[in-house]
Image (cartoon, rainbow, N blue to C red; front, top):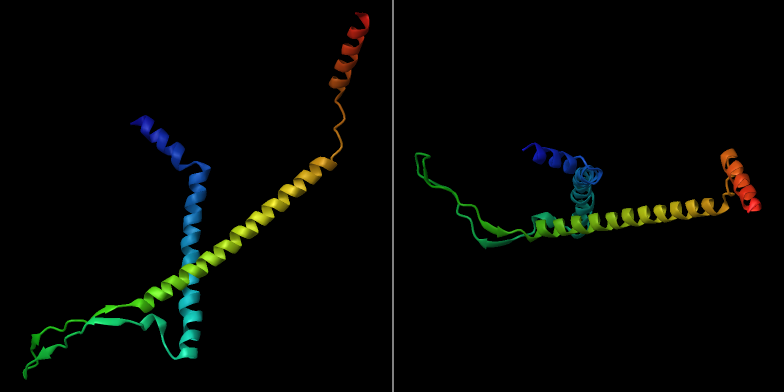
Length: 152
């Protein structure tokens, strides 16, 4: 059991797992922001331009039945809601997905470009850097080596 706990600790607290957990949490929050942009900013514009609320679009598959009451106000038959196919909500979710995908594409592209620029800068700095001066120990060892070569 102790070995299992140790292996689990090693797995759970690795850098990659923690990075992934942070990414999932931030991704969830990012998804909420994009959903709000679509639902609260884009869709009202669509509704105003074409006089239709996309999220309310639906096809009624089975009509609903209203509640029936007698003269005393007692419920004789319970109301049954209509069965609908809510394709408008689906369209809104598809739009959410595309906006999230586009945003993530640009974020990944920007990160890749920044990473490439950083690597290029590091390569230029490495190429421009002069050779380091040898330490005193290296100079002495080189002299000793040269003297030993001369004696042979």
